[in-house]
Image (cartoon, rainbow, N blue to C red; front, side, top):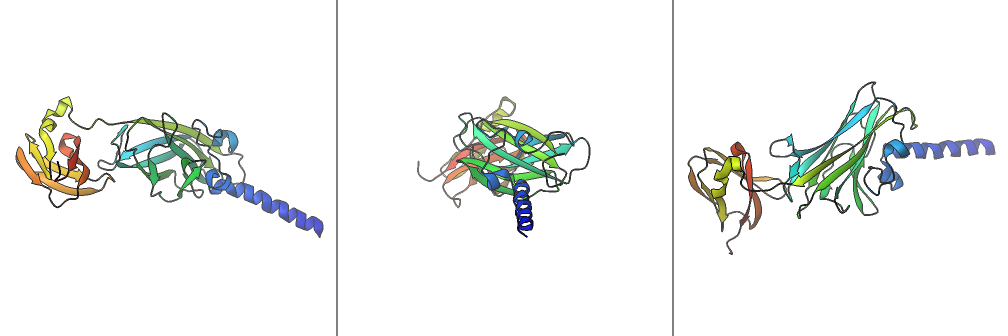
Length: 266
């Protein structure tokens, strides 16, 4: 009887070890295995053999306005980060990942929020971590990310796995990746110099010399708060009902944006 209990205890212990991978190593083991500087190796070295499926990982920063991947960000704006795991051969039972975003000084860059299905937010020794909360059958993980308000170059580091679901770390596949993005220069480009004459004063926006189209205003959280048609080259938009603060004025048909400040106090 004692031998039976010992065997059961051993099986339970092994089950806990293997199941820890299902919920992410940050949650279960307090480990950063993103492959970022200062992390504990990566999932290919520490957890899964990089032999099956030949996976690749693509990190995408998605502009909420255009729903397209970008290589620059607007400080303080909310984006969606996508982690897409593709395999060259075989059919994995599921997928997992772990990621972080760091500035050049290795401090946390921005803030992850509102994780999608199968994703959770964690912290490992002060470093912000985003990772799978279960072995997910879909190959794409998503989360919102608020860009740092003070700007700076940002690098997303990530590890990913394609797993066969046998309860062990053998026979799986690993892929790591990184994505570097820089703060965008808000303002005028040579191609659309007319944006030079778009500005705000107090709680009015002056649109001078623009072609017909649409003007949109977004809050720092990425939410659209106003959309107006531009019907003439010179217009003044009254925004007296809006709260004081910083906003982004977008002119989609020009592909341009500017940061504006609304306040009755000057």
